[in-house]
Amino acid sequence: MKIKKFIKKLLPNTPFGNSIYYAYRMRQLKKVFFNQLKNNESWLKTEEDSKNMYDEYDEREQIDYESGSGLCIYRGKLSWIREKEIRGHYLKYLIEEIECLVSEKNKIKILEVGCGNCINLVNLKDRFGDQLQLFGIDISNKRIEVAKKYFSKKLDDIEIYQHSIIKRYDRWNDNFFDVVFSMHCLEQISYNCLPALEQMYRLTKKKLIMIEPVFENGNQVQKLYLICADHNRILIKTTRGLGYKITRNEALNIQSSGGLNQSSIVVIEK
Image (cartoon, rainbow, N blue to C red; front, side):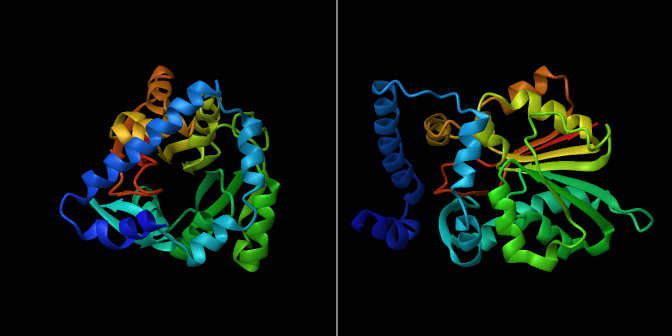
């Protein structure tokens, strides 16, 4: 508890705070890594593993979003920021990519993969109104139920379905959506992102936008964290292997989860 208070109140305001903090986290992560090796733990997270984990989330994400805060690296500085503000920074990147497609004549069809509690979809609806036609899919029906409980009528005109993106979904034809996006969803697929990318690419007509960890964009601590957490580490490698055109790949100006879970925006244009 003393260490937590030190990090929260003192470390962000000290010179070299980032270096001290990352050195501390690297030491922790090395212990976790070697314990996992010792216990012969797998780093091949399955679809079922992810579903079980998200089923257990229940209302946690919503409660954190409404009233929680977290340690981040924001604009290169160690900072404590409210979860709602963190999500807002993520959404700025997404909105920037959507704005250039918005037309007064036609609605833009957008699908979120891994919509969870539908926080992103509700924010997009608030921002763009009837300029967008919004859809969402999530592997966990429990999280969709939480979304309906919290957002109720705000989900009117947003179509939500339970489905896994690694499986073909014939509800929609090829190129049905103008934009398909994910936000820290593919990270949970670990080493099975190829079928997900294929399906997302199949469904989009213009852009595939992913706000996800990119292993190559991380520092050494973030890379070790991605390994220990068994988050996806081959997003760029898989995308390039499929021959898709990456037009944007950059780290966000905010790195959340204590600055450990690398966050980048990757845009693929069709």
